Length: 346
Image (cartoon, rainbow, N blue to C red):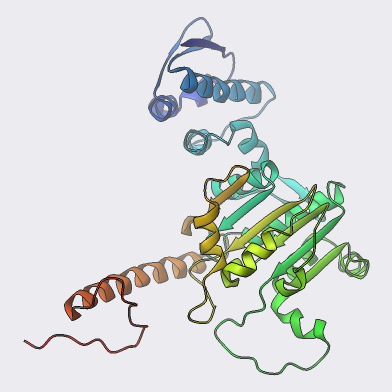
């Protein structure tokens, strides 16, 4: 199959340094291109040619609208678009621009953040999984606030498991709401950055915004809502199934979590990990995986995440080696960190 895409502006950034952009497009989609009469001809298998045509058509229309691609930007966009057929160049570029989310004006800072926003807009259920500081919760709250203020939904429901992060707090004084508020504080913090404090309090009083632990969700159907489940790695498989099945008509749900920070008691199945195994490939559900390079907090946070990642790999490799030396049978539960390992006598 052969098609031709008219190309009048921006031909320099399209090809990139030493033709790196066009070579990326050709190699990623297995097509051939050539310039002919102010247009680019694309040749190859039908499906690949149609994808390449759509990408170049988006590029041509964006340049006509006045968009200027900075050095290396188009190459970054193309890597995402070529790898993920569900993402378009136009959506990536549009979502990369600054946008108003309540009183806050934000622009995604990494390619995965752009993919995340695009996935939330295009899908009714999106999973954002990755290390701390990548903007999973913050951007989800921003999208929820935008949907509410633009009257796309009538309510926001924010929920997370009430699980202590490695310490037992014991008895907490106060009302039930006062007891659970400390667990939900990160969600309140994000809300207060997007909307004036007085307005947030009024919306909470009227239940237009609801912040509650997962236990409060059982038996409900959440219609016309934007639902965010935060810290999903601390939900059980049963809780995850329960919250996912609360979604009603005209509702979006975003599930966020970090699989390296599970605080569940031993023996409990992580709901987020289970969901990635059960739901992967289900139509209408998007999974966005954040990496260490997506950390947008203090520069030390990225270094800390990298250091712990290297350490965990070393410990995992060491334990596997020790298990083999100890002659343990395959499938036996490995010892917990700190357990003594018995080595065979010489």
